[in-house]
Image 1 (cartoon, helix red, strand yellow):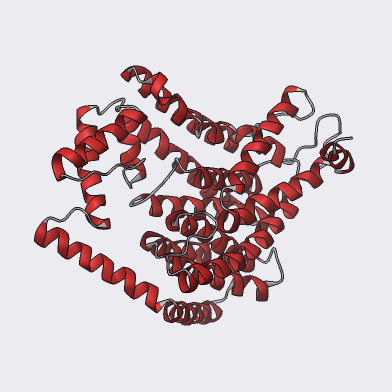
Image 2 (image 1 turned 90 degrees about the vertical axis):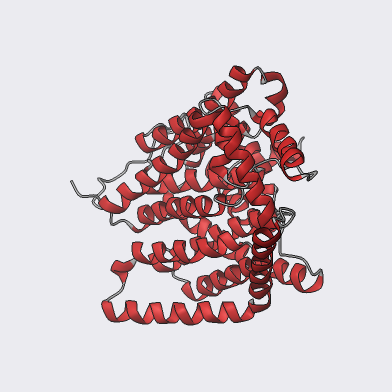
Amino acid sequence: MNPFTTLRRHLTPAQINIYFSIACFFSPPVLGSLVSITFNAGGVWSAMLLAAKRRRLNVDRPMLAITVAIYAYCAAMVLASIVNGTLAADLRFFLPLITFLLFPISYSTWSITEKSVLARIAILASTAACFGALAMAVFQYHRLGVRAEGGAGNPIVFATVTCLAVMTCLAGALSGIEKRWKLLVPAAIAGAIAIVYSGSRMIWVAVPIAGIVVLLINRRRFTGASLARFVAIGVVIALVIAAIGSHAILDRADFLVSDWDALNANGDHSTALGLRVAMWEIGFSAFREMPIFGHGISASRALMKQGFQDQYGLSQGFSHFHNGFLTALVEAGLLGALTLASIFVVAAWNAARTLRLSVDPVERFGATMVLVAVITYLTGGMAGILVGHDILDATLMVFLISGTYLASGRTVAPTGKSAPATAPDASRHP
């Protein structure tokens, strides 16, 4: 008998979800693309279970709103290719959209997991991920002499997903869901140090912003005096982290100053900063040519390569314009950029509503997960990748799905079993 079939027969759907959730939260910083493989394989399997009527679609208002935004973005990308007559050339670039299309299916499967169980899995798996990220970062930076990229193979991606793990640990410690805060705080510090070693300057900006938001969300748990003490401790910890990573910080600062001088004094666009400025100039010029539907994915990449050659005499080519919304503007015009923005706007709106109405710790933790993901992706995406990378896309879906479910979703039982009785939710105001 197939061992996987045997294993599946001995595990309940809820138990399978536990292992699946552990893999999704642990793997992004440490095992990289495993999160994409796990999430997409789980989504396809869930789709098969739905088709076989062994699961049922869980549709609630917050999930439906995000689903509409996600599907509108996917439709805008396809429509841009149709309008530009590049559908055949762009087909292979549409494969990453499958990750987004799996959102409502994976949401329905995740909804059979008890909320408190999922919240603790997210916290503890992120704790392990932070320690793993630091171990890999120290080895890569000090032994290999490169910017830390963890298991992601890309410093920006590594820093982004590690930031999410750090904030999950911090939110878990402040929310009181996981009592072992003495484990969570060192894990968050470990993850923050790993981010410093990555050299990703935009995520360095995202970390304090997201951290302050997490603190403000949980401010009710502190009196005025203890909050001041907590802020003081946070400043000391930040200084310690900066001291440990001072070499990496100074190196990246020197590179930025050097690139800035080369760009302003000599018009040198061959540096990291110069390449970004060149891409942004090429991108805005391309957007003005086709502002509504854009150029399509493959044509946009060709335009970038041609622009580097014609305008700057450089033989360069990238898969994106190092700004998530500019990339969407060039590939799918205003329609693409607006629908992409709507995903983050709707997600943040759902989370803010929960934080306004609910005092339940698990629900507020879920809303915090969503807001942290929105802040991290938008900050990093201003000068890097927003969507379109397998690890980032899968991790974004993991946080939007689990966060939305914890914040405002309903728990359902697998088809064929009666749903557990739930008491009226006293945590919400009428």
